[in-house]
Image (cartoon, rainbow, N blue to C red; front, top):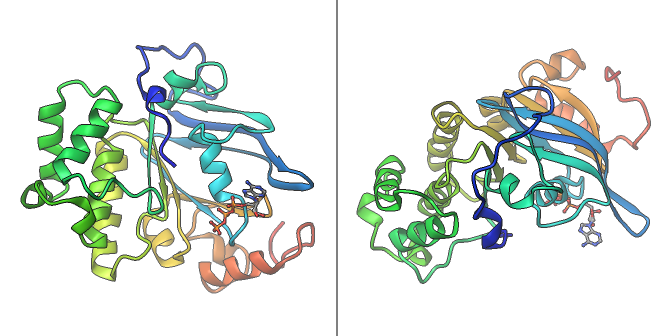
Length: 271
Ligand code: ATP
């Protein structure tokens, strides 16, 4: 799912009019993707602000990956608009994508390159200024100094996730997309990564869109969640408050109830 390199070689670009203010790093409006008769993503609208971690939740096939792929410019929407840091993705593709980055388990880094070589390679792809210094900082920040000369294919899952996150912040993105960043990690490694991601939102001053099937970590990390089912946003809110607001004991219980409801049918407690 790596976006082609030229998307990140953007010249300096100033957003003319950021939809809904300078704090909005992602604005999705009436986004729609159709495959034949299936609406994989069905006219959804939402925003992500800087320093905010937003969880994109939903059962298998809900449309999460399709949504992320459209935001990354990998897929073209059937209709709808996407602005990244106020820049229209359709009209100014390279400039918009230069403001974003991503990490996903299914987009592994080349295993035959060392940790340092991978960071240098992607740093060149993203035209990172002062690359040598940036790589050293990230090796230190992500506890990778002792692994710098190790090939990525030999790393543990937790180590690979740390390298993938370091790669994802190389270009200091305003918007970070993380597709199941803690999948396959042990509880301790997952906690380390969750802490790091929260720090990234604040210290990196970016907005994060995060997908996960782990409701415990969603409650621990996300400021807000969007619940997607069959391409539509059914529910949105604070993951710590939503269960009580909708008569569920836990977020997981609410998730299961929403996932099983036929679309259009009222969910108990859900307006
Ligand atoms: P998961 O949690 O399993 O990763 P998801 O929420 O990411 O699921 P998507 O992969 O976005 O879901 O798929 C949404 C819907 O679109 C599914 O019904 C899927 O079968 C369909 N779909 C996705 N890609 C295509 C395609 N290239 N052609 C036809 N249908 C597709």
